[in-house]
Image 1: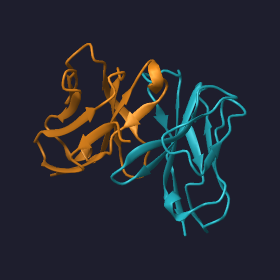
Image 2 (image 1 turned 180 degrees about the vertical axis):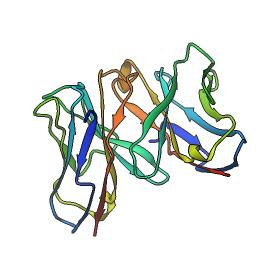
Image 3 (image 1 turned 30 degrees about the vertical axis):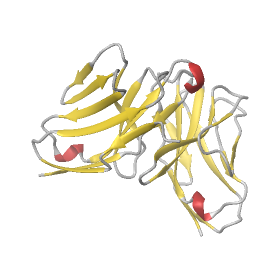
Length: 115
Length: 114
């Protein structure tokens, strides 16, 4: 059972454009929502994360928007650059309950930014 | 070198053979995890360990076993490999056991079962 659904599966953006990746979750016990970035041949690495007490978090060109009532969150990459080309995973975790200690990942989005 | 190491980098394995994927971390993290990555399915948790001496099942544990004899090592064993276990396997660790902790990933092992 996939508890975190991510879309789109792939995304092509021109340099300077905005990349948007969306995720939806089901388990209301989730209270931590990170995004991981993975370059080819490498393991994923934490990019940015948010907790549900805020609706938005921004770090440089990367912004997470969070909608608790809709159980959705998204990653926005402003001024996308070719170096941003990678696979992006959303995830959800919890500090307690049945999901304690584990992250549930989305299916991944392959982002390609053309020069 | 701080971080997580995995071995081998890649392996081609005949079906029915036994295989152990190795994972070592030098960050003294309490929790460790094994994931498999398949296109369109993302990262799926196979097994995890919150501390040395304890292990737990993840989302897709069948056909895999793990052990955690000490803090640093967390090997994943396929007792009798099948083609559906062809995947890229990632080991990860986190300082704490809460789901809010950042997970650090190794470089992965690409496994092909024929």
